[in-house]
Length: 236
Image 1 (cartoon, rainbow, N blue to C red):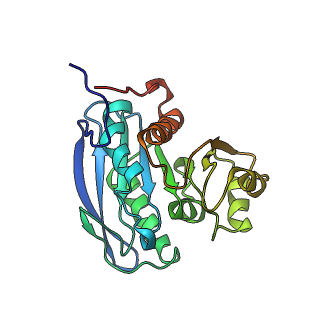
Image 2: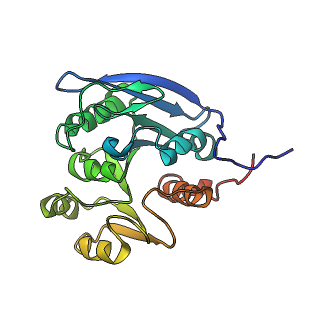
């Protein structure tokens, strides 16, 4: 008898904990959730601000790891940036307002490319994680960026200039009721970034609470990485 997908649903995948070392000597903890069958693409997740409780288990990311390997063949790589803590443990170091976190992003990318040997890597940032993505996830081997609720508090015009010249596709999901950057302000902020696709989401808030919003975000991720796997099932 089929069952509805619920917030607690965990679908089959090979889940492997890992530890990576940053260039400045810190150990960061994470997990890879790999499809049991074919891998359609891999997604590195940069989480929200740890000063507000952000971590690798922030709900959209946890649900992506629980569902997308089975639903869409997407390999999910999550980790805690320095000083961040989840059920899996706490990464060494202290939160540095997005500065030393450059070392965390570079270490995670190195792990993806050199250890996991990923060929098709996408990077998603959520809130604080979007700043890390725009500023530090510039490796030429990354396919595309996905931005979820970008606050654009520390990302500079020079950072945007890099992506304008680079030309890789960027998808940005902007909540109508965001606490930091609402759709009209986002249109102005990103007006020069012609390679950025802005998706305005009516009724959405910064934290994307509720199963309808979770399904929407996960569907937009799959649309970028494995569109042939849409629509996502609502029951198993």
